[in-house]
Length: 140
Image 1: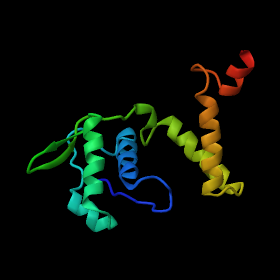
Image 2: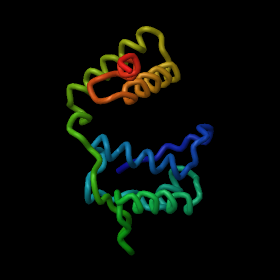
Image 3: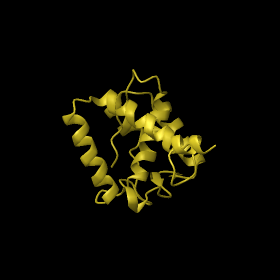
Image 4: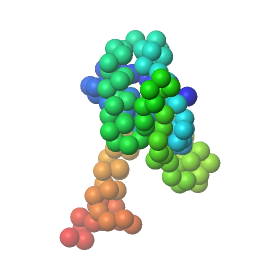
């Protein structure tokens, strides 16, 4: 079962943090179709947030077709976002873990790594597949 972590200082609405965490769990294969999400009551007990916030997040996930509410039973995952390339034992994940180890050894902290990843991610998705954003810009 997924455990939500709410960062009240992030500037991201609490319900969106829940939506993002469910989507991340779906992408990583931590949640699969048929899995039950925690009840609003369970989330409230663990995070001390308003139950309406949990329900708003679950409604958004339902609207996106990722989960479905079953009256009297709970909210269940309808479809996965997982890709084998991102699974726990995948070569890409292992390479990223190795890179993370090197980044920490180089003295980078969480914020440094987040900034670096965001920058490279932005560059990598600016151009067509197989190119980096910089190469795509240089080609134009």
